[in-house]
Image (cartoon, one colour):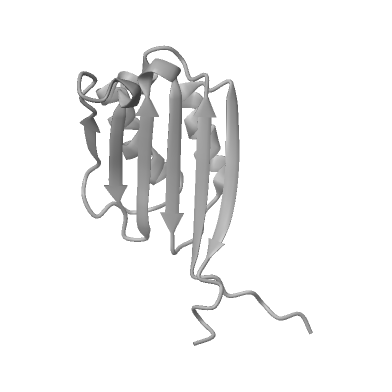
Length: 129
């Protein structure tokens, strides 16, 4: 008999390189991405996305945006570095997650030349205790 694995959560980490010019610094575009991603992966928002611009004068190497959307199932976080057309995205959920749907929306919104993906199973022992 095969024992079913009980996992508490799933986390998808995406590092996106060579994103289309201007997308990493476009506040409205990144807000829209966070808002649309929630529906694309069948999650539910606890509140609207929040997104902030990093002060490019104080932190020239970190100029870009940081944002998140709180989910009933956990959260989605985005960080961009405009100068390098780089975006990192973390999607964490205690529900089910279809990575293909998330990646498809990332490609549509940001057109990265390369995406590094990591998929983690979280809380492997949560249901044992």
